[in-house]
Length: 398
Image 1: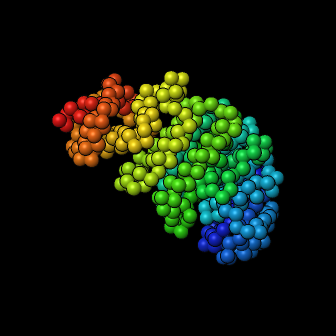
Image 2: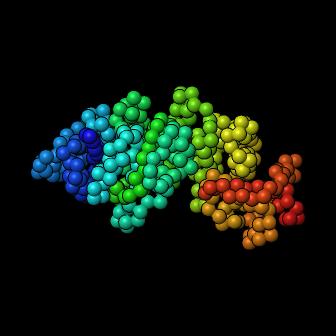
Image 3: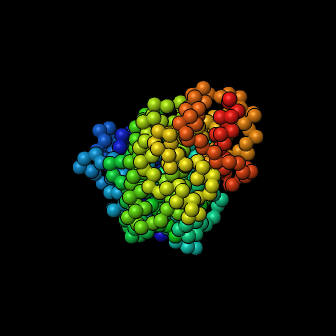
């Protein structure tokens, strides 16, 4: 079975030889082609790669050159179009493969040609095994099951370290969005929507290098969030163009991940950025939480979490801050998607932020009392579900 390894190359002079050494050391070298895509860097990356590969016997490789810099997505697309292997594998040129990585990833394909094979990874220079692949070893069958595991964060969004059946990618037009960072978020979502079978290899097959000079690690929080805004628009367009309904998985990806970003801004104390981006995310509410709840797409816990979309934008913003404070800040619980509490925690709060009580009073005075009631707490997978009792909070404060 032939495998195409696609390696975009741009300003990776200190890393490219290490990357290629890990490739040529793989045991199935005779059945693979290495495709390097020169994205018009100005350093010696391509010269070093050419010199190294020229000295390697039995390695089938080609180096493609862009006329101008197109970015990571364009380089991956160029490599994908040129690939002739039955499967393709995306490898970033500052990363590397572990020993026998390709053999481990290709072994499940001996019995069945899956659309996707996902391996685990370790980080470099500190070799910590990923906690972003939390599925057990084995097969995941069916589009809905694959999408659901992706929606709840069971496997990572990055395009690298995934064996993909080339015909599957081409038939479904699964190319990368060019001119946009966080392209992996959009691409992997599309793959998860379309794949019929996915095999998980619960062994590290990839070495992910964390370096200060990379695009992603050097990006400001402001720019990072602004790119996610564009990415969510692309995801919404895909759902609409594919005539997909907003099921539980689509809702979790589209609404849940945006909530996570806004909570992250609050957690980091980036209140100015929260004020800037909340209205943008508010406008991106393409499906009403109330409608989703009525159609049994989401539970009451998620409805409570996302009820801010049903309020005017100013009140919705403060509702989210209130919800975050009650679930995150006061309880100190790390949450995913939603939160839980049974009401008894009201007596155990250590601090009561002045801004929250002032806002709560002004909300009540203006005639809006949010009184959702109370229900018993329950665990649901890795998520918590929460019930808010702002009326009780207000009475307690008085």
